[in-house]
Length: 287
Image (cartoon, rainbow, N blue to C red; front, side):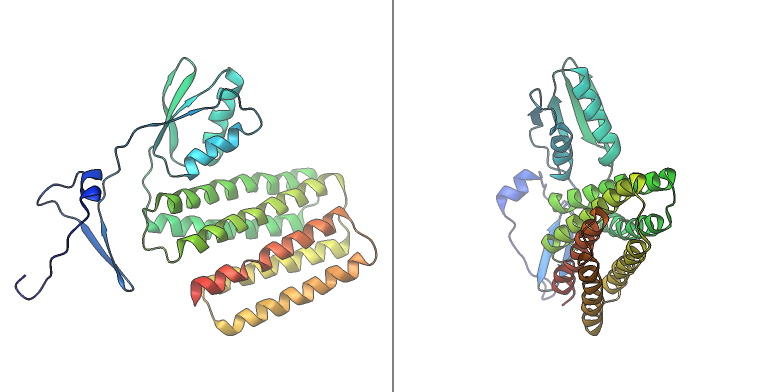
């Protein structure tokens, strides 16, 4: 048109889905060799209904899955007050922006009241990294039950931030995120790191960690910090250094194993492997 722009057709199914009207402005974003057409509207589809009357142990996980899946509103049908308490606790503990907007006989309606954008996603991901760093440092310094419990409580924050990131990725709203499937794996793996820190803290409450175990933990923590710095300031030659650090720590664990397994050593072996396994996501994202 006029030699400056060109006309492109938009799928009628998408137009109807978002109720796009003639003359309405849409956002255009250029990402590599792709052009993304966006509207700020939410889909007004049918409300999701989930019946959890027969659930007990998995109830909290199902509520979390509703949130992570990207639904903005859902009706949850339950059977008793104990189930309601679990629903409320899960929403409070891990579902950022999800609130109960209506409660009736045997059901609640939950709705997302928070907006999300790329900046919020980036901030949440950085907070996961730094929270894990704090957990590792506190675990190394912990001397009593109260200090170990501080580490355990920090894991709730990691879970909440991880669920928030996964929700945004599943909604598909943020198209500026490069390789979202790989980022999803990264987030899940970071949450596993938090789980191991939590288990080590629980171990420390009832057992005294040896001096060797403590200093091994300190150095594994440094590997995680090195990864975080590499993630935000990627240099290919530093990937090789990341492997050397892992290999050295793995060798130390092998030496300790010859003297006998202890639970904290087993957990630190998992911790080291989880951190090292992040290398695939790093290189895939950055190259």
